[in-house]
Image (cartoon, rainbow, N blue to C red; front, top):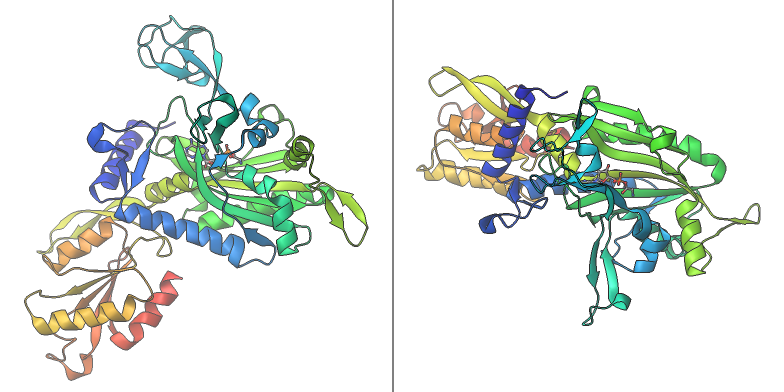
Length: 453
Ligand code: GAP
């Protein structure tokens, strides 16, 4: 259950995201488009760090996974075979009083009577199925034969390219195909900021295996994925695994786990890890008439592989990172008086900017030149930000608020003016503890690289 304090926390997070350039309402100057979001200068960095890290651990650091990048516009036959054209829908209801379109599960019930959650109206239409796919036309003629869909998940292009990917990569089972990309769903009620959007990104892995390996691999991938979230800075205490019961699972799935996160608006799904059996490949083999079988050299058997699918949402994970990192604590101001400090405690690996670099004074040429030397030293290795405006305390606060884990200050000691032994050393300040240490510029890159990696 979320409390008024949780709602207030969420409001502050949304406001920070806009104010500091993480996430903006899409088409804002035209009044916005519901369920669509644009990532600003910092949001795009955070998102990129997340996707790059997922790709690194899922593809680059493994011998058994290859990547792909499929088209967004999808042939209708693909989505007919997968079952999306027929069944990818939510039951929808209209409130005749306030004209709201509602998902059936959003209705509230009082004394056994269903009501509109917006106006309390009881004059509701019957439920009807609403297909969530966006339809478009390919080519000049808008006719039945030119229909295409914006993909509702990245997974289907992986299944459809299974044979090509297998042949070119010469992998043996078990092996996986990974993809990061956009997906589109015409959600009836987009809500909770970016949590339920109409355009979003997924990070999906289809891990193909022998039928007898499926159940064990489902457990394996659930654990791998939990480790992933911990490695990007989400505490285990805020993560929960829900074993999806039979009646909620797709009929072809032999087991599904939802990995959930405690958002301020409640415990909600971040990722699904599903054992989908051989359903998808069998469907595409049947519909296309092309064999999607695997030939096992050792046993000389031909069969359709089974698949375990960890499917994560980029936008939901970005939102979880922001919610997890958001904190207000107490820190001394310029005069030593305690004030509230707003800080995003991102894991250094995820932080958009890794290091802020400041000359103590902006009107001292030698300090500025030295600080720019530090920028040149670090910039090829990490995203840094140079800032010379305002008091040092204010500059620290600005970086705290956007989650920069380290700040370096070049001062008169760096120039050797106070103590020759301190020449070419700088102050390195850590965001969370606010502790400062003196470090030689020549040691800076190594020290930061270890802490960020
Ligand atoms: N291929 C399986 C699949 O797409 P899903 O549970 O429908 O499964 C996987 O979606 C993940 O994609 C979800 O766990 C969530 O993180 C993300 N996702 C799904 N719908 C979303 C939406 N409307 N907005 C943002 N993320 C969404």
